[in-house]
Length: 368
Image (cartoon, rainbow, N blue to C red):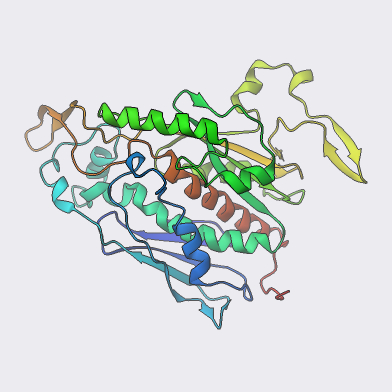
């Protein structure tokens, strides 16, 4: 099986390259009877590029318009595969001709060239570009719409940019309301301003920075997941690593648990309004690869954008000798803001797949 599909019951297959004709996705296994339209897709596509502060993102700003070409009839999903595409219109492929033999450090230029014998599309990173997350976001719009029918809510937002960390504790509703108010997708607006300034400063120096995205999932029923090999956290981690620039994933307290004693790390159970709940949630809502009923909390580390205008060491593959590269073109000084909707979509896709596999979501929905 080729590596462009993920999921077993809600199967998502993405296609397209950064400078190709279009980017798209096919979703097979979505239940019939879900009210869905291009308006739902567009709402998430519009969140991808933060326009509140244009200087913190790449000058390439595609006016993405999602087009549904199959699987939806009279406003409802039919149970057939759903294909959604957007066109690439703002490409500038000439930017990559002069560096086609100079692999950019920390990019997939070298590894892709070796794997595919030089036949890979090198323009803008081709298949390995962050541009392909558009497909994930479109499939995520469908997954989130499906999950909302079962009161499952997926909320992603920027937790940190470089060394600037969001310290204020905010409630779910405040996060939901404010996370897209700032250009960096941070619901703490005072902290967001500091993050924006840090990105601008890095860009002015010809450099880039990274950060972390946190994703919270509410109202997932207990027992979702298929251990051992298809454990919920295992599948979420795998899916999240398909998002370009992701270099780390942790659940709950994550790596901090390694410094605790069991008496500190264990989430004690108790009864609350006739239900079993945990007094704390250091496990992040997943135990033994199964959802525990507590909010699922995930943090994702995003590396600094590899394309920077500072001169870097590389090799000239046409001459097989050391060289240098100074990357031109249009690049984000920080990809974290664009990663937020992609992370949210990826988590939603994985949960939709697992909830269908668990029988919680039926194959045919009855519209309420």
